[in-house]
Image (cartoon, rainbow, N blue to C red):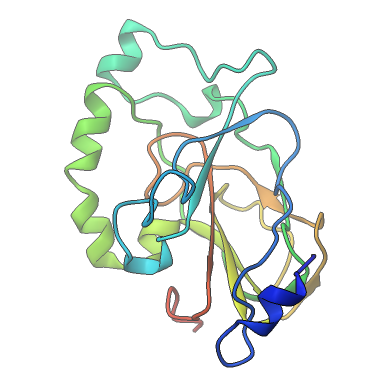
Length: 198
């Protein structure tokens, strides 16, 4: 992890103003939502998602699962998408402060199924952080909390309190939480507020 001296000196309460993240994966991925396009990147500041980045795994030809007539009208198996089960790596050095690995992976939603799924998002938001993040790992890196969300159920290989280094294996890409199809979300926050840490 590299921080510039300028970032160190301009943080609040000793927390750096920015953080450099390594890619938490290998292979081919696309950025779907990012603070490079807008802040908040997901349209809201709720649940520490203002600076979240959605990474979508693609094949070596740059494509996700082919769209078929069936995929436009029915949910699809998540394992049909490139990247499902792909290793997810720590993007920073730090201490794991929370882990959730019990949420089921759900089908992928494109076309009409994605509209139905979007109309139920308020229920997941009302249910809180875990319903949105799904299976996740939170890493405290010098006061900045880095979240890796939508991991595959049962795949997380680390525990709360464990020290990790950039590149450490954390788990596998899944489709848990508020995700329409296999993807992985990273976000950083200066607050532990996104999760109850119980």
